[in-house]
Length: 125
Image (tube, rainbow, N blue to C red; front, side, top):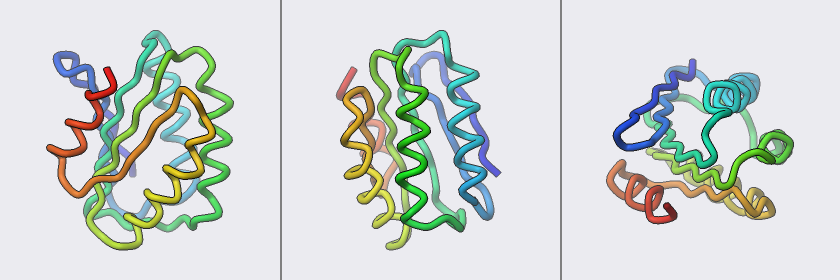
C-alpha cells in the first residue's frame, strides 16, 4: 500500500510505502499524484520506502519513467527524493535516477535519511 499526504507549510508531498509494493502499486501512485496535485506547477515528493518490500524489478523502471514522461507536461518541475534502507532499493534508486535523467523537468535521487532527502528536495526550489 502507498499512502500519500501533503504538508502545505513545507509544500511537500509525503509518500509512505507500507508492506509489499508491486509495479501496479507504483502506476497507481503516479496516477494519484497527478490527479491530486494537477493544479500545482511544481511538485516536491518525499517518498519513504523504509520497511517496505519492493516486488517490482529493475526492468519496470523504464515503464515508470515512460508513465511519468506522459504526465509531466503541465508541470514546471517535479523533484522526487526517496528514502531507502537496503542495498536493493538503493541500487534501484540509482538506476531510476539514471533512466529518469532523460526527462528535463524531472529529477530524482535516493537518500538514507529524511534530513538529507528534504535538503536536496528543496535545494531546487
